[in-house]
Length: 59
Image (tube, rainbow, N blue to C red; front, side):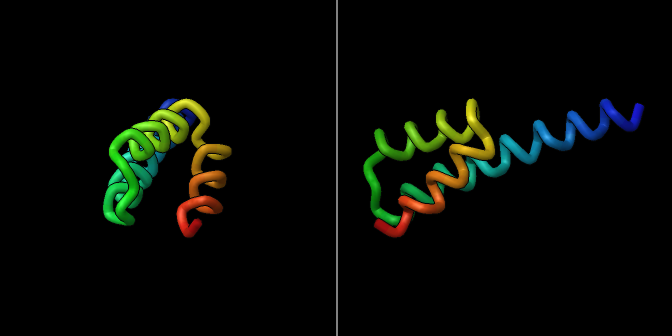
């Protein structure tokens, strides 16, 4: 039971960070296409996608 709750928590964390990265990219003045790429990258590659986005968001 605890394992299932852990997996569900990770799923919601992944969704939350993906939406945050998308909104942050749009607020920083990036194009919608770039923001969608960020969204897809963080959804399918959560840890790597978020780390890469955090590095390139200031460029």
